[in-house]
Length: 216
Image: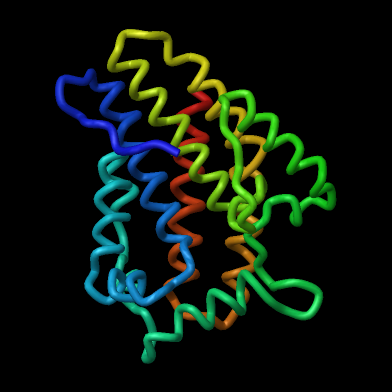
């Protein structure tokens, strides 16, 4: 939805918004299907470095702790893909840990309609791809990447960032901030690779930090 914004000649607030936008972009990538390039990024430590650096730029406390699970792709190059499919994509009656927020409160159509209203309000349209369904985690994280990018642009250009900040706060509270803790709990109960449990733990911590900051 948005590209990286340059930090040069930005205010402290603008740099913080840009850092948050980059952190969301890294999280979007972290939830991609683990193809060969993704597995290579895990094994090389590039993914761990991207997540640690972008979150640490938002708050050094977010970079603290253990990051080794993000360099563990399993014994085989197929392990991450197999587990991703088992956890998030398939299963009798649906996967055990779906990445669709509307499946966590029993009112999916209402959730999707509300997400679409958020997106359309800012002139955004979704593609036909399943990953682009309005309540999919990656779609919601990419929307927050977009909002924080626009907030950084507004601060850089001396415009009012309020509309973007209010949208961030409201969308977080009503969507990923509400259901990601449930997703994290479900993944924690699965006998899965450390990578996925660590990823959901880091995501929940980052969103909790975002909600706390937006509530001020």
